Length: 593
Ligand code: ADP
Ligand code: MG
Image (tube, rainbow, N blue to C red; front, top):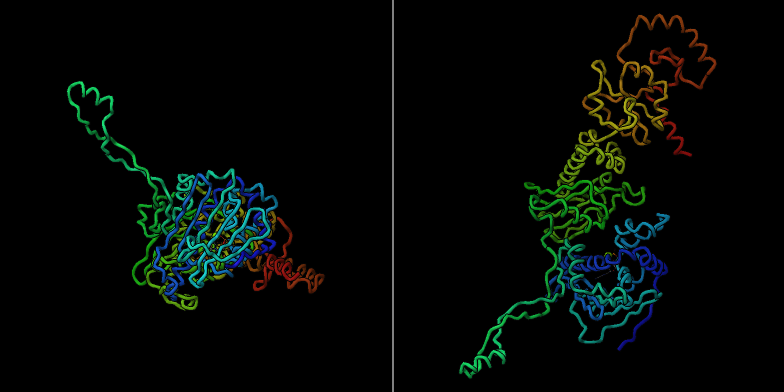
């Protein structure tokens, strides 16, 4: 009989537990969602690993989650038949915070100065296992991994800096495989053990878990029972001369306890899109991706033919924490299933190019092998076709937002993900036609509201051939540039490229609807109104002045020329046709510093 061994938590864990308890005190009920999500992950892992190691499933157990609650004693147990944990895994998983979800949570708290006041923000993160201590004084985790022949018990208490691990010796408590968590609720939180409350929480927060979740519920049924007749009645009858006892039937309610299936287990993406409501899509999104805000758009589709798969994609309403992750392809935003078995959410550009890595969703394929590996994914022709279709659908979805009657929706999208689309102009030539109509810019005629290239083209003058732009560091400085003068005079609209990436993006696009993008700060700007005769005349008059200025400036300028591009300013510095624009030069300088 091995005694319990004591372990200290990694320092961050104690801090994390403290933070969780302090920042989520008003949102305690998330604990159940977190623990059920861990149970579901453990089942997913088992199902996935057993494809290549069938021995893991040798205990023929249903893959399910059972939540039993004892309201009189304030105890909740959550049991799954998943992958379980070995002794070492208990130490690694429940004693340190190497895990992704919780690490992200910690980072957010660090990033936001006044985290404690923003519970809503924190609510969107998976805070993980330690949320059990939001409501529990003591947590016991008894777990049996199919990789180990022993079952181990992890035990921890709220506000403690250590935990213990021992071997399970009580034969009554042995389980064939998986994990059983027992929560001993705090005095004030015992209400969570009310079976109806558990049922409601599961329905609200874990509706879309794809394994059955059973809760232990009291039920009743009515039945007719024969009872002896009331003695008073019998006496009355007796007066009438009938002496033998009479039987009578009565309806009674029998009470008993049983497991009740509490969630819908058919994955939402397998349902007919006509029968799924927007609320259900949004709820699925929030539960699957631990999001707090509803998505901006969703798209549910099936593709048939060469490659068959089903998918639901979403555009989030906000950018992920930390702007630097904007184009991080390792977002865990796409969950890949093969024939309903969860395979992976760890992609690096295989299913979406990195500039679209903000798109979230699930993809379920019938054509990939269940034991699909990273190498297979990268080489698979099927995956390439899937990627093409997914990207197309993502663009359709974004286009849908841009056509929404509510202009604010697209403004919100653009503010969050505009940079990603501009990056797409640079990295994804193949999709230029899809990206270009989605771009937005300020212009000389619209400095408050951004316009699309379509709006620009519609507003072009009949004699105007090109799409004009000026790159600058702000709308104000673009408005004040002398380069604008002649164009304003002719009523030609000029796009203001004020985001550093804009200019490169536009240069990559080269043209839109057969109209070239033209930088108005470059030499040789042709506004289609050249008058050769007049130019010759002016050159004769001012040629000497130009030579004189060039002499004075020497190497500081490449040449001094007479131009027709100004109307009120006397002169302007322009860039050479093939050189960098002034804006680019500024950016390059800033980068090399
Ligand atoms: P996350 O789920 O984001 O990884 P958690 O704090 O929720 O973080 O869980 C930490 C780790 O503990 C999990 O990654 C998993 O390895 C392990 N774990 C938690 N619950 C279970 C369970 N029911 N079965 C097996 N492993 C579990
Ligand atoms: Mg978790």
